Image (cartoon, rainbow, N blue to C red; front, side, top):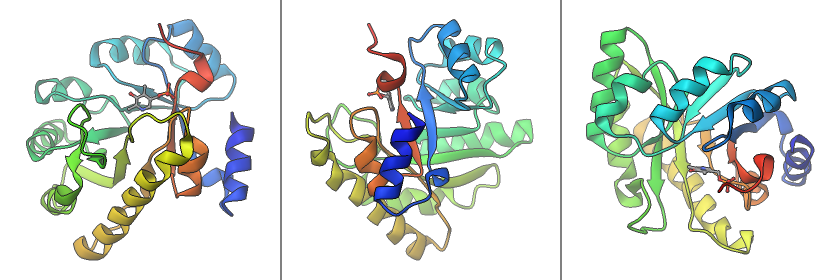
Length: 217
Ligand SMILES: *Cc1c(COP(=O)(O)O)cnc(C)c1O
């Protein structure tokens, strides 16, 4: 996996070390996660709160956990402080809840804003026209460190088809940095089928499940 990331990075004229691999472990057994950690994977991504709490407790070898799934406001209390990065903040009410709980726990939660670039109704994410407004409303929260943006393009058989979505996310990020006066270094984009293209378009975090653990049931 790491060597394929290196190839894609070098092709794009980027440092391989500037790209973080998050191994996505939804529905993956604990023993398999431990094996991946032993093989050198440092960061793991989970979609479901219940499932992840058990895994985080048991897989001590993991260095980082990322929350990448849809997050309900009433689950914020359970995830806060458990995850190094929450990728899926897509509405102001959720950010408010994170801010409130972070203050109570006296911690700073790192987050990304998830943007729905395709406009598909089944996808989470703030609409692309509203991303900058949301960033502006969240950036001053003392309990939140806003690190960047995340997106999930529609599924395509041909990864080249995903390229425009990755490019648009980068452009929104560049525009937001200018208009909001903050730095947004992280772009979480690219999955098993399209991470090479995402790296070429500037991904700093890729979220890969199937290509590491095989197909999910
Ligand atoms: C499942 C999932 C992934 C990984 O998908 P693969 O195609 O298995 O690599 C990445 N991101 C999110 C948000 C996911 O839910």
